[in-house]
Image (cartoon, rainbow, N blue to C red; front, side, top):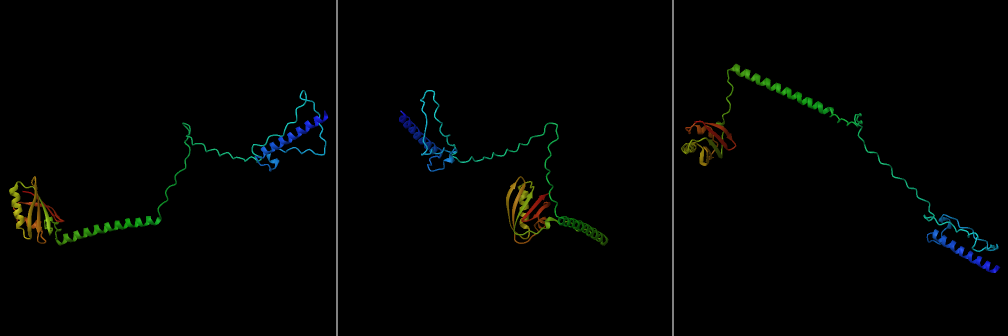
Length: 249
């Protein structure tokens, strides 16, 4: 009977050791040669083989339960936990002051820098020079008028556009013509002007005629035409290859 009990205890001891080794393997994460302390628990010391193992067997009814196994391995495989720093809290959104309260002060925009002092000085000098120039011109005009008055010389007459010298191709614009006969008389007068090489009536629209005139040389066409045309006219423009006439009778 005692031999059966010893055999049973030996078998239980062998199974407990196998269970301890399996638990150690799970705590190491599959590394059989790792330090058992990394699993978060320290395995019990191996029993001395020389010491006798004694135990009493009382069966399953009313007896105490077998000793519990070692605690389970740490889920972190024995590694220390990594501290995590929480993100900083965002700044609160700007809120409008309550009704009736004084508005929140705002940062004032700095004024633009003043222009360099040298620029102000140059501008003042230019303005002063302009004033002196205007005053001097007025004095010269007044003095010239006084001298001409004392000498009894009248002021020169304004320039007559009819005296403007034209050359080459000239476009004569004349209006208004009462009828086609008046235009024919005007065309013949143009052909009699000295220095005119050719005359061609381009258009006649509602009494306004456009005439192309070719000059053989420089000619004061407006003044020369007055001696040939029996109709009075005024020169509205003369220059840049164009002569504009306004018939008055």
